[in-house]
Image 1 (spheres, rainbow, N blue to C red):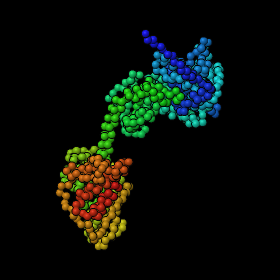
Image 2 (image 1 turned 30 degrees about the vertical axis):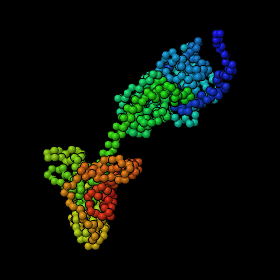
Image 3 (image 1 turned 90 degrees about the horizontal axis):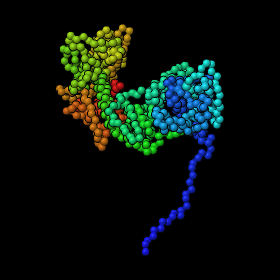
Length: 611
């Protein structure tokens, strides 16, 4: 018996369904009209409407009229479409909210047009109380439409003209809301220059802002980014459309940002504000510029954000190669900046130690290799009779000053000393046994710290304490200590014409000196450099490498991390590590107490000169 197949019908009930529709039209219009929170964005939308109407010139005027503040946007574009009688079709504009003509034009293949929601005109609610839209018809007359914030009605009227009606469209918003009255011409100019950067460039439109209240006029120029334009980036591609990148690399700054644009209009001020891009390289602060994707979908209300749909996801994936290249470039930039900062910091520390050496007794601090570049003179010490240039043993640049002219060479302009600016005593601090003598020298300098050696008068005196002076009217004076211990303050006054400067030195007269355990420094080295070694699990802060003449600093130590929060703190920390290593190396055999005394002394006179 043949088998018969029986198809059973589903007996389940159909699920209830329906279509969404607006329950309260006026409430929906209120929500739409107030969805734009930024009045500057509303102004940008009015300008974009003019650009879409093929305007070549747009003038934005801010002023006061009959006691009320107003904002007026006038263009020379094509104006509104006209009806069968040749009059501007205001009725269509007022009764087709959210039914944009531009969306229909885009569907027909039109390009370079912004806006597709039909709500741009309503954004005047966030700017002022009333809007008057004026444009001419083909019948030779000028017509106006009046709208009021919070009112569902609009009125139409004919405007009287003297001769010929103006071409284009004029929007007047008056009076402005209380919080918008501070919206000056400068702010409008800067906002439009960033917001509509590529739209202005691509369309060639000329935008002028006239601020009659401030009596100033501005021309809106597309924003120019600073930094180096990156040409070597890979091309970002997506099946949805073109992605254009124009990125600039500069110094790190929290204000730097890359904006997201759509067809030349900025929709997100900082790409890093989007969760999908809240990471390197967009958060690094090194980048400025734009990423333009014509296919991302905008949020209808504010048009200052994007819908994170499938098109957005494809956009995010398309930027992966660009991000990888940017991360490599920024890493190289960071290394270069660290090297520049380290060189600058090392030069600052070396100059500070040179000044400290000038202030401290030469016979106690003799590890510096000092070279006098003037011909016919051998090596000497910076604490001796003449302060001269100092360089390290690696052939680095001089720490202060400049090389003097050689035989037969003429001095450059910058090698001549200027007027007297300061004078100091060398050494500035010293210890002298009772009854003993030593010499002190007055070092006069100009504002650029170049030593002055002519047209100077000196006068030495004892300000406080006991002792005697010889040759107190000369540059070098001999001081003889008293027979009793005490503290003596020496002062010198340098005079050059009408300029008078003073400097002081402190002499400790004692009958108990620190034991001299130092051996003569026959093989003196220059001031060391420094390098970093990351050792976060180790407790050492720094070590001196005598073979390389460098101080190795543990940049993984908690103290270094703490000091790196700002430049001045980091500079002082490295300076103290220098002092520690140099005191340990150059005072071998001293007790812990004596080493600490030396370190405090050296740190004090060095940190005084840190800049």
